[in-house]
Length: 185
Image: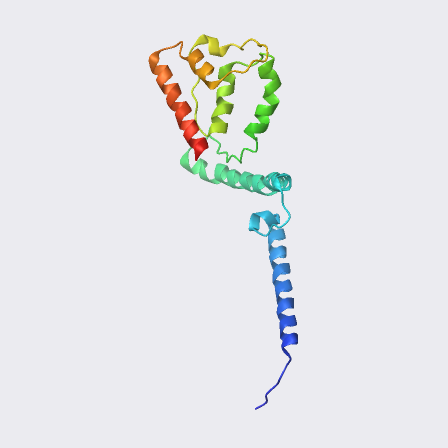
């Protein structure tokens, strides 16, 4: 039997080398799937702009081609067996459009009176996280004339909309209440 005594400093150094090996292996595996560090939780120096760029680039170069391969196989192998000939499957990717940025771009058009209120309902719905139906009145399908820059309060908007039925006013006030409660949370 033989007893060997080693210094603790050597053992710690070997542990550090193992950690480096482990990190290099993780990086190698991640790069084989062409994923940036943010996808595996290893990001240290990311801000919103670099995270968005990494997300968009990975979507274009990794996930979209994989989606196309999967749909190609499903369309050629799966659908004919079901006797579906005039149908094609499509797997959609994420929507990278930022509704707040779109709203900033639309501001000059709104101020110039080039957009109708119903044109903006879909965008407002995405910002609020709700599905907003179009207003049926004809006046909301036409662009609103540009007005001099005056402050319009929420109360003025409610009064303007209340020209319709009493029931519409109640629904509008409930929507305003719900949104104010969400903001307060």
